[in-house]
Amino acid sequence: MAVEAERDELVDLLRSVATTTVVVWHWMFTIIVWRSDGPHADNPIGYVSGLWSLTWVLQVMPLFFVAGGYVHSVAWAKSRGRPGAWRRFAASRAKQLALPALVLIAFVVGIAALGANLHAGPDRWLPRGVALVLSPLWFLIVYLVLVVTVPLWDRLHQRWGELVPIALVCLAMGVDVLRFRYDHPEAAWFNMVFVWAACHQVGWSWERLRRAPARFGHALMLIGFGSLLGLTNMGLYPRSMVGTTAAADRFSNMGPPTLPILALCCVQVGLVVAYRDRILAVAHRPRVPRFTTWLSANAMPLFLWHTVGLAAFYALAHTLTGVPESPTLVWWLTRPLWIIGPALATLPLLAASRALAPRRRAAVP
Image (tube, rainbow, N blue to C red; front, top):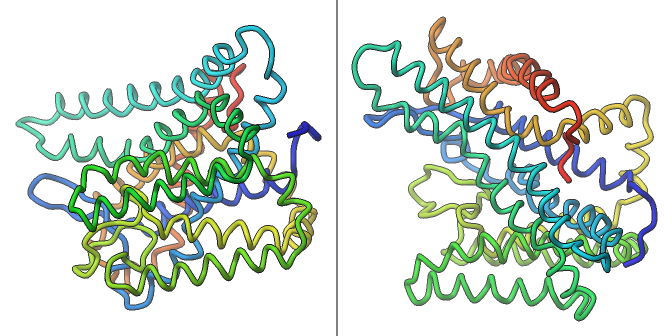
């Protein structure tokens, strides 16, 4: 693929919207439920009939991986063919992703250890609390695997083009067959690579998608939406695109990802292709470029630290007033506070992360 502009404003906007949506979703819709072993994360999807439909709009991780694939393909095209390019590329990207994560882990574990020392008696809930705060790192592990193997994906694209994501979809389908038809649940973890690699690989075809007519986008939307309807109404896959505690949802479509996530990816890519001009019109509105520029520079720190900000605000609210453990009327009425509060708690962490690594690019590579 030819390398054109340094940046694609549509990709920047999509990454900014995806990052913001994930962060705001966690802040606004997380319900902390205390059990005998400590805190567990829940959400209102399993409590309110039909609220699962919201996840078909707000589950944007597939689109984030697509945008990341395009960015990585452009970055690798600049290094392709140079001696030692793979090693330098992988080392550079791994450093940009892994070092901030290690700082986060050290900070969270350190705070937990301090709390255990200050509090008399064993705190059985601390391991659960640490696990919840660090839970977004699943994304970083998968993303890191895809980043350091970018030359492999690029070579596959050069050889087989758009057949690569289609083949990955077929592999993901095979994994689901093994998992559900032949009762091999351990096979599900292969889809942590196959599903997200399929989304990521679509980014290599971004230039062709950018030139595609709107009717192609509408076709992708119809195919993806029809697939979602069929898959989620066959009595196997949950309708929600996030995990819930509903008794009818025996598993989560996100952990590990399943075929409906790929159908959702098809819908999202089709939407972008069909309405590219309208989305770009939004990108050109006053203040939007400033927002996308700031978020592109802070995407990784924000994603890493937003659960720490949520935990800090939760601790304050739990101490002062208590926090409902189900979506009561009070819970719904206070949702705006659960955007403002965690945001205010997270901003100093972003400033500290920039101060600790002033020369590091904060944006997701």
